[in-house]
Image 1: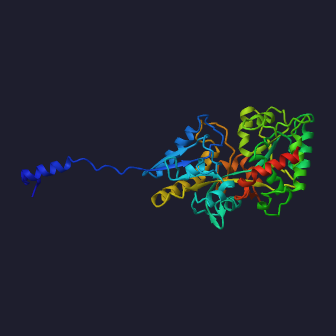
Image 2: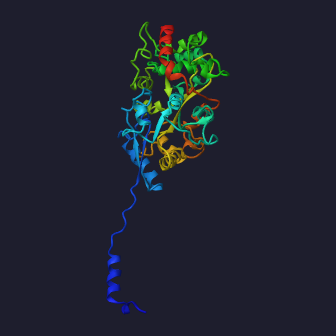
Image 3: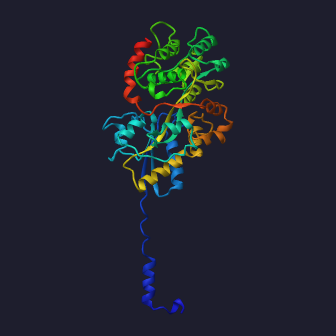
Amino acid sequence: MSWRALPCAVLLALSACSDSPDPEPEPRRPLKAVLFPYIPDSGKDQFAGLKQRLEADFEAKHADIDLEVVFDFNLDVYDLDEGGALNTLLGAGDGAAQVVEVDTLVLGSLVSKGWVQPVRVDANAVHPAAAEAVQVSGESYGVPTYLCTNVVYSRSTNIRSATDSTSLVRILDEAAPGKRPLATNLDGSWTLPSAYLDAWADTHPGSALASAVSLPLDTSVVEAFSAVVESCALEPGVNPCMDGTYADNTLPEEAFATEAANGFMGYTERLFYILAANPSMALPEVISVPLGAGSSPTVFVDALVLNTHCTGTCAQDARAFTDFMKDPEVRTLIAFSQDAPRGSTPRYLLQANRAFYQQEPARSDPMYPKYEALLRNARPYPNQGFPENRKAMQAALLENLQ
């Protein structure tokens, strides 16, 4: 039977069906991820470009998820107080996020408070120190993203022969006598004690670093560390590395960039600010800083943690995001400022993903292969005990060093 032979009533019914509205699409599931804002803002746009790129690239693969990426300097992701920033972000209220990027120095505290949940980590895909740093009592609680370690940048090739704090200061002093040998920031209850732990690891390369996160201080470590601290003071009683002059700004980077200081100590990504202060300077030499009676690299590890209230489909979405963020292509996007205008300076951030270093552009970059070499045999900072002991350690160090 042809359609022309159908009764009019049937035709009207078919016509009515064809004009019915399409069913409403399922609303996209919201997912909020708070990421570390303590990285160079390559685009000089308060991370607007990076935020847009991450959201767009992720949603292109997961159209049913509405991702919100947050970079916010006003969120203190070291605040462990009840009702504080991390408690809010990892809570169940309006201000909660499903994924938060944290420093694993605080990871043990987050686990003990029940604010984060176990996650899956491929230990073969990340640096061994990163895999160790996210483990608490045999379970992994974070997906590693960045590594941070103190390095020394210098114009002198002689810096390569520095083996301890004494030889480091001597080499830097001889590079240009009369100038400040080393510019750095050692002010603060997180910064100074962690530098001491770095010196402790340099002095005791085969010992468990967790044993150093409490008083009393190790006298031999303090003695070696003091050589570096004192090198920053060109006149008695005035030490910009210790008194807050070099804190929370780029003054030590500028001192090195303008040759007012012979060396700079800080994280690898501070090279971004050194080059910003002197774009025409040649790339410097770099070594793992020997702060003690030897040299043994110690690394901070940043990782993505999952809110313990995020379960079921929410947890699946959160894991999809952490899988996205650990992809070498995403790590390359961030490390090489591909979210910023073409030609922007790389962020020089150390990546936890091992494959990142084996692919372009990192493999042929003049700095990243050197960074990777510095990470060999690196140990992570302890993920338990530091937040509770840092202020007492700072007070003891100030008393001993001054």
